Length: 370
Image 1 (cartoon, rainbow, N blue to C red):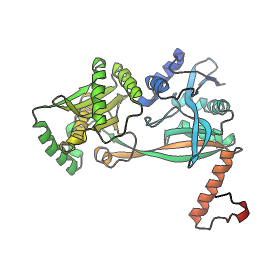
Image 2 (cartoon, helix red, strand yellow):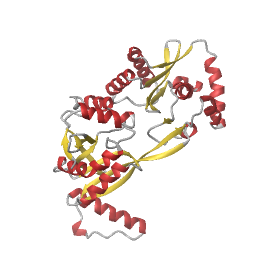
Image 3 (spheres, one colour):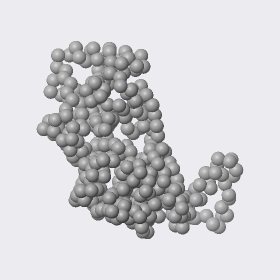
Image 4 (cartoon, rainbow, N blue to C red):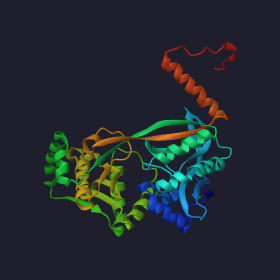
């Protein structure tokens, strides 16, 4: 019968058999061991506790791993409740229990019980962002529902992606909307007519520190706010470069970097992780020119099957990509708790609003002070 355990820490070193489980089963770059190690070292708050829940079979062979942490979970407005949440944040594009489909299916009941036990005193368990069709996350939700939890699914973000279908970059370029093709050709001709323009795609570990300096310089000159996880990104980029997963693109005019993008290539998918350009050179479409250069590399050199724009429904993404899917959150709220009572009342209120019926009137004497 599968048995659960807590594994302590990614950064302190998992037992070898659990490292192998992660290495073999992580479907995306943000579910890999180096990602979680960097997350633990650079993004956890001081004193924040991890719960790395594992389930193994009778012989001790790992079946599944669910990385969680303690945090406050938003319920309504500024109201939050203590709970267990996925080891993920705004940098994460996808989360799921780790393991083979067969192993995870066997492990789900024990994994669900382990999460409830680890969260003693925690009324909420929240997994996000998960794929809408993720079987393991859905099975965990079903188990928690049987254990007295209310299950809520909520939208996180749209995810645009491209099914390459074996095409070359030239065939892909021909499939783009006419207006985008025209812009790329017209602005590209103007950009590459400059004698001081240079384009680089950095993959070598020794070149990464200087390339990241250039990326950060572009970021500071862009429309974006300050990067909150600078050391995390540097740690991930350095380790991914050592594994040949990094593609860091740069366009410079003379010695000045004007566009920078960080892509990761992992298991046949090129993921567009970070991008920025210097607003002073927006008229040259340096950002689009760099996207095209990296797309050519991904399709013609790396020969990926999928290109993924990760998080968000930004309008420009639909021009470059071919399809959209959604990422969700799954929240389990213990019914016999104040968060359970609150969310049940909120659900009733939503149903009443949808029906158009008036909300129940609160007697004057029952209203709080204003």
